[in-house]
Each structure stands twice: as structure tokens, then as C-alpha cells.
Image 1: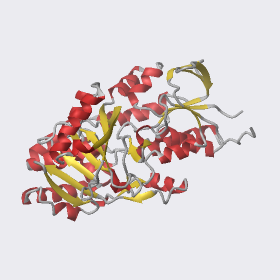
Image 2 (image 1 turned 90 degrees about the vertical axis):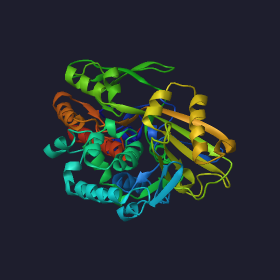
Image 3 (image 1 turned 135 degrees about the vertical axis):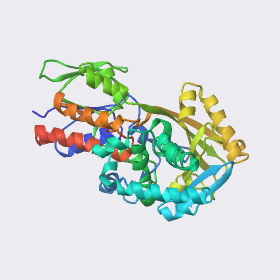
Image 4 (image 1 turned 60 degrees about the vertical axis):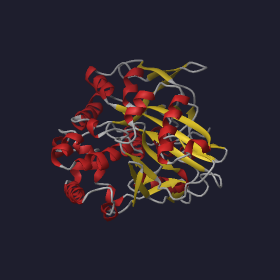
Length: 448
């Protein structure tokens, strides 16, 4: 008989696990509580405006994900963006072209002293080599995460490095702050800057998950409320909620959801593992999509805001840079990503409160912006991105080893417990599927 496999979550991790298993002859069932697939890699088309609900680009460093897009016949849909990046300070824009560290040093935002210190930091980050691989940390990696990024930079470098480089970097890549993330996390992110090129899917980031979903058995609006073993080595009973609550039996389960959700639905974790899953810290995220009646042709793709100027906005994305068909002719679309502090403060506030706060700062940056608004949309993500506090990687590495030793027929994908990124989610989904295939063998497809 074909082993029955359940996947919890239809984000890119769950979909990649399902896709790999299906290609190998399995028939996994994917349970998803939302009415759409893709999770943070989802998008929607509203009156010709293609809105990415969270993830908005695919960096060149996401090699496996870009290769998979081509495998799925989406090579032409994967388009390079303008690759421009701006930092706003006191309302003034400082623009650079991403992809070369030399361009970074031409910015008038930094003093000569700070530019020299940035060179030292980049060289230091590159010299650390594999110690900055968060997926396979070493003893030196654990040493590097003993300090917070803020403490390290404040004690050793000009204040501009902390406020003009580290804060925007964490805001954009981790949805967090230098105070809540480690020196290791900062250096790992910094190492990628000199070779960062950015791509986007022309029809929306959700076009890839939607393509993958066509061949998979996905039960939308079917939240999993409880998982338990029927016997010490027996199958798992999965209880689902929604409009038609049911019980199902499966031989293996892949969790492709944020870490804190795991112990909520699977109570049989050991105390140490349960504590670890619950302790994994996430920053919430609020994304607002703002459609306007004019274009902003001279803007950058990514625009970072400094906390000395803005208390709500962290980054704003001008979506027309992602392809010619993203926005109706003559119109504009801005994806405004709130900073961590604002996301936490406003997470449970009504949409109109969030929108009003966002528009105040948009008007400061682009006078008259709110008067051109066609419509806004607000998207909230309780588990926006993993935060790498000092000591997190060591604890997570220990937990991953414990998972292999203690749990049988349970597999984990998603953020990898160490960083929220599309490439990591995709890779961990594939890895979970490979572990199942290695244990259970390949399957012949049923004729039905």
C-alpha cells in the first residue's frame, strides 16, 4: 500500500515537500487553514494591480528556487528587477544600485570614516567563510552569536553603521532590529550584499505556488487542530476543523508551519523540544498595499526608512520595478512594510488605523501621496520572520539533532528554525521529502 503522508501548511515549504513526494510516486495530502496557497509567497490581482502579500522578490542567492521556477516552465516569468535601493534620511533620498559593494561606497549618506569601517566589516564577513552558514553552524558560529548586533556595532564602529546600515538591513531581511538579533545574523546578511541581484515573478510571487498546487491534493480552509499517535509506533490521527471536521490516519507527518504552532497541535513532544519550539521568537509583520492614480518612475525598487525619521514604516517597495504588467498603465502600486515596533503596536488595530498611520509617513516622503490613493489593502502575518537572538543558533542546532533522534515519522520544514527566507523554506521542504523517500522508499503511482 502507498504510505499516507500528511503535510501541514501549503506555504512554499509544504508545497515543495508535496511536489517532491508526488514526483516520487507518493500521494500526500496538504492541509491549509487559509483559503489560498503560498502563505507569505502568495499574491492577488485586484483590478490589474498585482499585489504580493508578503515576499516580494527572489534574490539571486536563492539558486534552488530560481532553478525550480525554470523547471516549472516559468523561466520567462522570472524577470530581473531594476535592482535599485534608496535610504531616506530627513526626507532626502540616497540611491544606489544593488549588486556591487563599490556602488555602496559612493553613497553620500555615509561619512568617509563610516565607509572605511564598512569596508573592514565586509572583508571581515567574507573572511569568516562557512562560519556564517546558519544552516550548518560551527563552533566559531556559536562564538559569533554571543553578542547582539547592536552591542557589537555600538562598541566597535561609528554610530552611522548601526543606524544607517544595520537597522535598515535587519528591517528588510529579518523584519527585526539589531537589538533583537545577533552579531552572527548581521554578518551573515552583510556577506550577501556585494553580490545581490533581485528577480521577481512577473505575474506575482503567488504564481509559483499556484502552479505547484495544480498537481497536489490540497485541502484549503481545513485547519489541523490536533495530531496524536494511535499507538507507540502506529499511525498518526489528524483531526481537522473548519466547516466539516474530520479525522484522518497517516503514516508520516510533515510540519510546514512556524515553530510555535507545532506544540499547539502535537502535544506528544518531549518537554525540551516543546520548550524550544515555543521559544523560537518571531517578529510579526504588517504589509500594506497602496494603489495610487499616478506613477513614480524615478523611485527605487526598495526604499529603507531610518527610525530617527519614521516610527511606522520600515521599507517601501515600488512594484512597477518588478515587471511591465504589474500595475495598470498610468497607475502606481506601493508595498509598505511596517517596522517591527509598529507591527507589534498596530497588529490588532483596525485596518483604517493602520492605513492612516502609514499614509502620514508616505505623505512626509512623497507629498500629496494620500490624495492619490485608489485603494489600500492590509495583510497581517503573526509569524513574520524568525529573530536570531544571541544563542539562538546554538539552541536551534541542538534541537535539530534532537528531532532526528527522538521523533519517528515526523518531519519539519519551513523556516528551518534559523531564518525566514523563501530559499530556506523551499530547501527544507525538499529535504523533508527526501528523508521520507529514503526511509520509506520510492512508490509506484496508483492507476486511479
